[in-house]
Image 1 (cartoon, protein in one colour):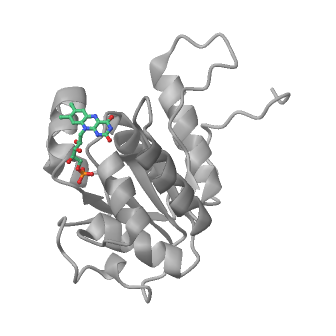
Image 2: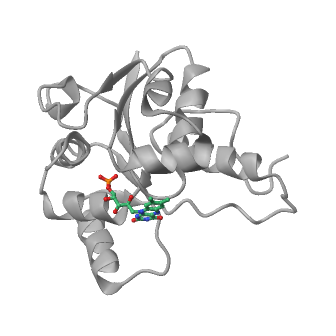
Length: 187
Ligand SMILES: Cc1cc2nc3c(=O)[nH]c(=O)nc-3n(C[C@H](O)[C@H](O)[C@H](O)COP(=O)(O)O)c2cc1C
C-alpha cells in the first residue's frame, strides 16, 4: 500500500481536499491519512455543506488537529508524500517557520525533514510580502508551492473538471497516476 497524508485547512477551496480524497478512494493501493484543521470547518460547511466527520469518512484514517501521537507526526511512518489542500496563509506561515503548532504543521515538517514530497495548494489573493516570503522559505526547504489555479488552456466551462485536473496533477507529483490528467499535445 502507498500512504499519503492529506491535510485540509481553512482557506477557500475545500473542494480540492474533498476531491483528492474521493479520487484516492478509487485507487485500490492508496491509503489516505487525513487531518482537518478547525479553520476548515467553516469553509467545508459554507462551500461543500460537509461536516468534518463526513470528510473524515472519505479517508482511510483520520486524526485530530492536535493529535501529536498520530503516526503521521513521526518520520518513522513512511509515506509517499503529503498534500495540504487547500493551504491557508496561516498554515503556510506555520510550516515556513517550523512552528509545528498542530498536526498539519508537524506532519508537514516531518515530510520536509525526511526529504519527502510536500505540496501546498496555497490559496490567497492578492499576496502580501509575508505570504511570498513564506512561500520562498518553504520552497527553499524542499516543499512545492502549487496554488490551485484552474487550468484554462482549453475551452473548459466545467468547474468540476477543472478541480479534478488540479487534483490529478497534484497526485501525479506524488507518483500517483489517475485518469484526471492532461498532457499537452496528447489526446
Ligand atoms: C469563508 C472563509 C474563507 C477563507 N478564505 C481564506 C483564504 O482563501 N485564504 C486564507 O489564507 N485564509 C482564508 N480564511 C481564513 C482562515 O480560515 C483563517 O486564517 C484560519 O485561522 C486558518 O486556520 P487553519 O490554517 O488552521 O485552517 C477564510 C476564512 C473563511 C471563514
